[in-house]
Structures are given as structure tokens and as C-alpha cells.
Length: 96
Image: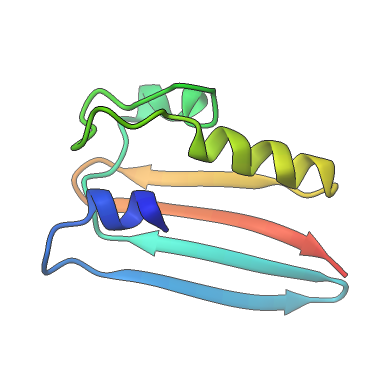
């Protein structure tokens, strides 16, 4: 959520949705922010990574790496889809 807030313009949209499919909950955070370059998506969850078009420097770049690590410990996964200039969508699953 913090990244969505940081990288979405004032009149942009941020949404969170939760759905259930059998024993899994799927959480999706979507925004209409600046998006991530396609060639950088592979590094999104790496520690200290910050996209070259990141609005605020000075952050640690650890948030998504920590999220991925915690979800991995819970046998879950996180993925990202993004279109430069149109926004990003992060989705993760949680088991019951």
C-alpha cells in the first residue's frame, strides 16, 4: 500500500480487493500510478531495489523484499503486473 500511495498521483486510484478460491485468499493491490518499466519487473522484489522512475528516493527499498520473504515463509507467492504510465497490480495468495 505504501508504494501505491507514494507512486500514484493525487487524483489517481488505489484499490484493494480480496477474493476466495477454494482454500486460498487472493489479495490484489492496484493503482493508477507511474508503473514500472517492463525490463525492471524481475528485480521488483530484490532487497534495496528502486525503480529508475521512482518518485521518492531515500527509502530503503526493502518493503517488497520483506513482503516476498514473509509470504514465502507462509508457502505463498506474490506477483506484479505493471504498465509504465498506467499503474501496477500486486497480487498475493494466503492459505487457510
